[in-house]
Length: 117
Image (cartoon, rainbow, N blue to C red; front, side):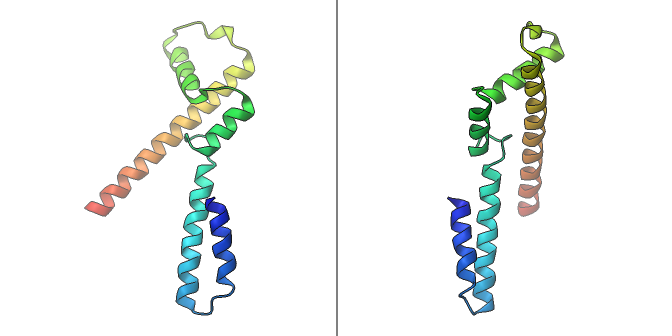
């Protein structure tokens, strides 16, 4: 929906003559484009995550991959039961989703601090 709306705004800018209105429409379109692309990120539990989970046919992928990494680090559970491809998917997805979460939280904290201080 966001990308569709931003596409519509991009098209409208061709018919607007006032530079300030055109600039405003472009800025709003860029915001909606970025928001739509962030929704497609598979490492945050938004639309992209659920699309990816459906593609790999592994429900609760984020939770299971982080639990697998914890079990691997603390040597709990029997991690040798899983096939190699599943192990690799859990490791790669768990590490990348954890990094994305940390980056998102750190950026949010810096943004809040910069706005209020």
